[in-house]
Length: 74
Image 1 (cartoon, one colour):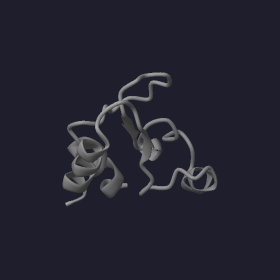
Image 2: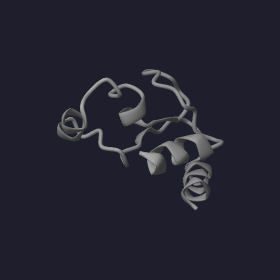
Image 3: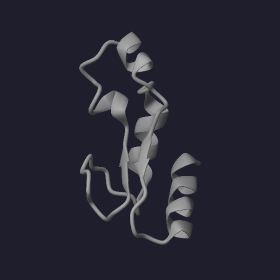
């Protein structure tokens, strides 16, 4: 779970929210937020494994978003 959490905590352009309908780009680590109450097996079956990061692209410049994700994964 550490890799997914690290990415979410390291981005600067993305917003760390689970807010549907926002115009900003959103990033979420489901295993430690929306699906944390489930067992490991249930999370895996739901597609919310420990390394899964959910992205919702908003209105920011795509190059800024990509650069931000790259730096967060280093």
